[in-house]
Length: 266
Image (cartoon, rainbow, N blue to C red; front, side, top):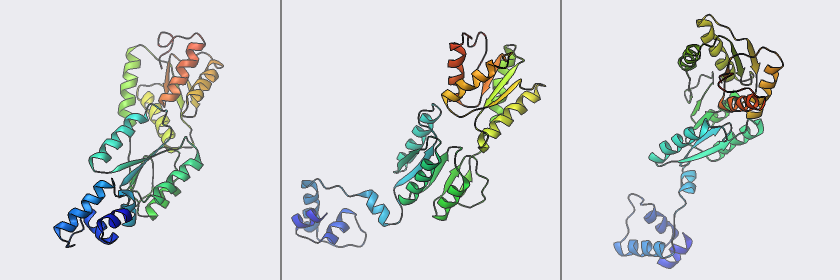
């Protein structure tokens, strides 16, 4: 901006008012054109992000996810980015890899950048972080928060409908023996998913033959299958609470010579 002002022979304040189209600022048409010509010649572009920060709010919304390699997330990221772009906003994405230090860093990044709001799509998110965000007047949408605050909304997933459809399909294939591999039970979402699966089985008069706790990772799904194989007989259907767990389970079964879905459905 300093270079534009020097070339046009005006003050930086005048350049700022003209380029930002400040209302109520009066300047001759000749001066205005001289400033616009100078800006074009110098290929000047205003720092929109800095301007928003100076006004106390950025042009970004935040999205905190667990693991970008998880096939569950690309569609979510794409949807958020599209919605933000349609509103003239940018998407600030933070990937935590289920690490508490990275979650904390992501929260502080959102606060430092003064984002307009944050969507938290990870179960590894302590409620103290949500409190910290709303304390800075940043609205939060969280998957599993139990906090009651005007700036915090809970996005609740009804798992029962999907699980019922999955079980109806498996029952139609003749399955009566089911194993469950849950996510880490120190997270509310993993407990909710596991309990919803068990409830869905109970509505059909069934109970799982095996219930194993795992992490939301491919290698954790593979390890769970190794544990299952050490406790025969294997169920004929395996219900995995996450895509990555399922991918690991399928890989481990196939490596053991167990066919999917001929010998076991996943």
